[in-house]
Length: 162
Image (cartoon, rainbow, N blue to C red):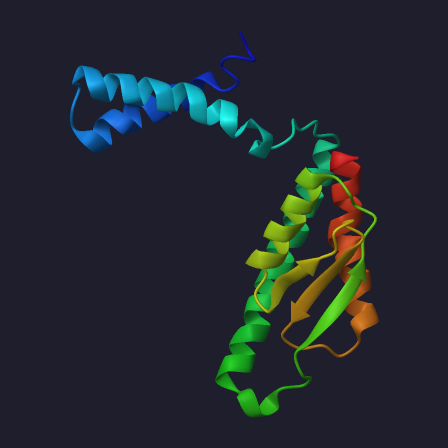
């Protein structure tokens, strides 16, 4: 049954959404909605995320606190940068961070952390997922940025998803 209907809730949602968007429950729309609800999850099952087995709940809490703290501090730095552009300390730049984390779910969480932290942007990841290029608004010491990302984010994520 799982092979025929890999995501039953998604199938039902697609079926209902189709009917709502078309504002019709004619036999043709019911048939099209049912086909979409059955075929789309089958065709797109390769895009569904891998099952997650999360470990170390205390590490999750510690990581969340680090993210909240770092995001708050980054917000203050960006506000200072915007209000006092003449007092900019360092230039923006790209930092290449070697990664040990390979788990796709862990990398997705790392991407979200980087994207919600003001002053940083995920620029690129190598095909083998061993190197992350990060854009940082102010780079004094690239090694310090690398150490910060690895210690505060990558290591806890490896514990959680490892």
